[in-house]
Amino acid sequence: MRYSTGAVKTYVAGGCGGPDLPLTIPEAANFRFFYDFAGHSVFSRWEDGNVWGSDFRDAGNGDLEPNGGSDVPQIYFFTGHGSCQDPPTATSPDFLVVCGNFGKPNFVTIGTECRWGNGAGNLQFAFIDASCPMDLVSIQNSWFPVFRGLHMAVGNSGTSTSDTLDSADRGGQFAAYTAGVPFPLSWFWPTLSVGDAWMTAGTIDVQSGCCAVALAAGVDRADAIDRRENERVSDGRPDPVPNWFAWKWVCA
Image (cartoon, rainbow, N blue to C red):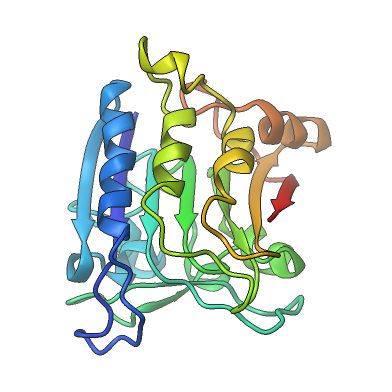
């Protein structure tokens, strides 16, 4: 499987608000360690200003940009800022926030701008480690339209006081459980389904009340639930028909 990482540490110096997130760069490196060890191939590994908002936007085929578009690989891991509401409502948007040198604006509204797996797109697994990119109350509004061949997405639900914290471990542990690492690492990190892996790792270094969320699409209820519970990165399942959605969560 081809995978990409996008990690944004520096926000303040670029005039993109803040705070800076110094652990995102080592977190992405930890993710790559496990995926490389498992035999997956890196497609792109951009950092800071080289992670552009346009990498995630479907309009104008920014997400198919051949040097780093998020819909080119099968797996994309993003670590950086999101944006939280206090509290979110059913119509509140979810965001990815970068600090790009180009491809602005830096705020990406997931529900209206991201469409993964459509056309020539390849993305099967969207792993979003940020602040509040998958709020439970607005998941239908913000995430159902995104699935156009996408199999599963993971993120966190919360508020500015129930938030994810900067962490080098959360993404690394998630990678260890999803990549399918061979012996001897498999003694310590058996391969889990994407959903179970995020339920295990997604609440590492988060504030009380922050929830790890995993969302899957399927042709019907049974298919969506099966993917939510059982699909692994290397299963080789066909792209789902997004007629039904199933999600689960666990909160700190």
